[in-house]
Image (cartoon, rainbow, N blue to C red; front, side):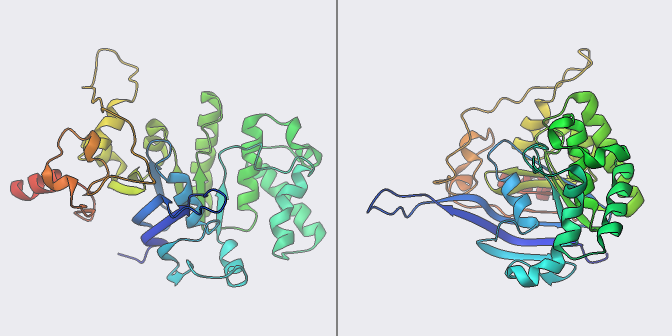
Length: 328
């Protein structure tokens, strides 16, 4: 097995809670709490979970927009977690991000051509003429016309804006792109166009993706592997076909059972979770999911399970792993 393109080891991101005047707070929000994952070359890793589970924070750490509180982050074998901005600059050419809101991520005062050229200017790549040529080439690659070069973001539709965001991410010929819910703000018909564009670009340029989404049907369409997050931790990881055919963790089962089916003649058993997501400032001891878990036992309330299993399918659950061990 070849070395992964990207690898995270026990990655953590804790945010201090603001205190009051003369009463500083000692509390922290544990947004990401010990994540291990890897992304292979030319692979798409889907990252799913409820809102507030830490998906976007993890995505920002993977491109080093956020510095990890603890843990290690490797890209092409180099530990980039502790690099300063100067040392990190060459890495930024290889790792890019496509944001959720295509309008908020574009400068309304810049033309689209200047937006695409900006990464080339920052990294001092090419001449003004070669940058313009590169921008026009990227417009064509993402399905836009040369006349879009001189337009502004407010003159585009949501789908066109996201295409500009993708073009900007491609400008420096990256090897990994983190896509943070890139289609959640778009109409369904436009979603399919953007997903197909991302798939085509991956085949054309050999890109790797981390695709963050709360829409499991979208992830099922585009991902090779899926990691399921709950309250800052990965609770299950498996190839996409395996995860949807045989989810092991009770939380994953609940997520998949909530997917609407187009065929009413093929109902799936609905898994209803009681209660809400716990407070990340004071997460439960042991397994974070145990207050809502129908399988919870005494051990789950005091001991934290590891993410274990086979090379293909891993799960963080005392009960499931015990049952798997007894059946093998």
